[in-house]
Image 1 (tube, each protein chain N blue to C red):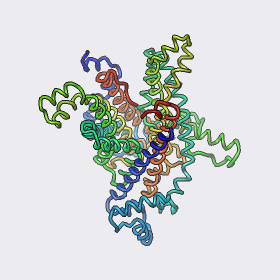
Image 2 (image 1 turned 135 degrees about the horizontal axis):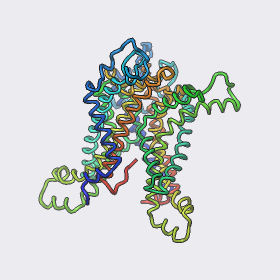
Image 3 (image 1 turned 120 degrees about the vertical axis):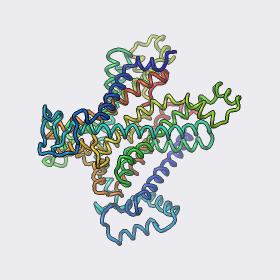
Image 4 (image 1 turned 90 degrees about the horizontal axis):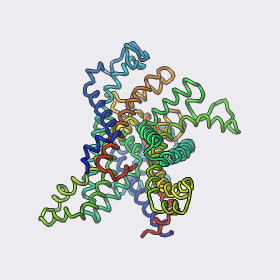
Length: 276
Length: 322
């Protein structure tokens, strides 16, 4: 069997996705070096089209769109990655308990997962943010706490099939405690599907954050791509560039993480087809 | 079969109760006073606030409040919008048709297109054509719907001037007749296209994957051995079986579709529930927000129930299991 790294290196979607993601991260980190200035700085030069002086043009308040797009990457990536990681942690914990303990705990936890998968995420996130107030950490918490069921189900399914295997029996025979077997013996083998789900989860969280910002529920003190698109909505006839460039940025980020997820899937679960 | 139907109904019930419980928690999650979530951030008269406190028993123990709340909802009392000065259910109800038209159109278009594209890709797997369709599906899957809406407006309304960019009807057209139908249809084209795009991508991927799986099964080889041509094998033997998962997929994705619809309606000024949601966020009309959440969740639970029953009807393996 080839190593997962080899398989990933041979997965074209995976490599393209990884490249896009790394470029975006580099851009977000190195924002000041890319000629991006304060994205909230207004100027008299409003509605300037893209050109040599303003690479991507300016908006209705004379703010530089290039700076907005570059700094907006920070918000999208931070929200997407942290929310997906939070979902992964919660999902792995719940999936482990459900899959290993079984019985009544399993039934109730999976009922909960079903409930949270049924509830329309966007609407719930929107109401929670509308009620408790806008803010980056709140958005991350809400999106993170809503995204766990898929990971939990995947981990649980892995546990159910792995816990009957011989190496687990061997661990029992060696006298290892149940919790140690769950965490140290089974869990590492159950993780690959969760890694894939987390990469796809970053893409989903970025889309959700953009949607919330478009509804005016993003962090009010930060520039985000969704907010830029909301602003562009009022000037579609006047300034096409205000709508085009932030949207391209969202697309690239989501596309990158989706491809990365596909590539990871090819590398780690060659037999398992991606769940939609 | 009756046993399956009954069982499935009983499964939907706790989900509904779960949704209601979440809304109840949300009301009490509101900073300060639950009255805020029940009345809205709006200068409501003292008298009304007192009435709400009484009606919901806000001075009583939580468990009693919960029972009262469930009782109110069961009687169809979804609260009162002070911004609009009307019952929430009425406010939402009159917007439902517009949203239904938009999402229904998008769903039908997306299903037909997605199945067609999935079929094209699966017929010749691992060819350039398949790679193109599959690649396009990942692209379509990654584009934010509301941005697609804006691009469509820029191209077809602003630049080319072919189609209207805003609203559902023109004022100059009479309220009935063919002109009216054509007028609404012309307003529907762009938002429905934007809304359908992501769903087309998802349906394409699902159809392709499902078809490839079915095509690898034994009964397909049997059909081929009996001399059925490739067209017949694909159309009569493989496709009906491959489309089964699509049935539950539709129910499962109604929530995503309605979320997309909320964004699309906002972009196109489409007078549906989504636009109402947007407006209610700005006016802080919390009773309407909670009402929309309840109605959307309810539709998703019902859609899941219906598609599961349909699935069982179509696939004997499900209803006879257990």
